[in-house]
Length: 161
Image 1 (cartoon, helix red, strand yellow):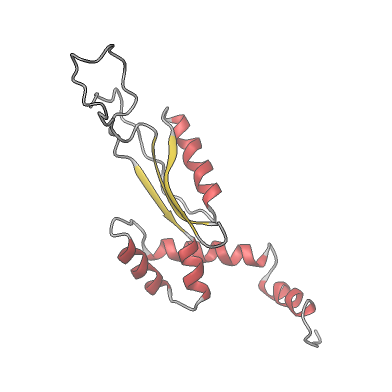
Image 2 (cartoon, rainbow, N blue to C red):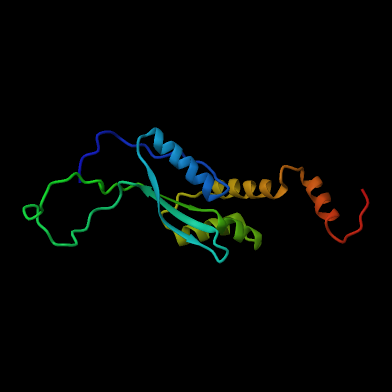
């Protein structure tokens, strides 16, 4: 591998309500640090919505010598783009939303995330922040009582207030 001329900092920790926010944030930060981030892997659910994805440095990976050439038998010397950069970022938010809707407690959600991904850095505060973001999105900018009234007005219930 080639030496890296300066230290490339990882993006600061943050909370995101969807994968597009995460991608925009990481790409904007990495641009200030003069590197690029790409999607290495992603998994979608049945509705084609991304449930988790792994981001990585565009310099990660290494070349495979598919033609079994040696340095002497190669026709020309070229610069290598891939430097085996170890940077990788993994995001799961749909799982938190699904488990919360099913009635799971934050400690159960956290245990499941750590069971599925042992390298996860999630803590209980991460889960609570994600649940708060989901709740705010569901309230659509209204107070909880106003959201309840709106929901009741849209249903067949009779009520007075």
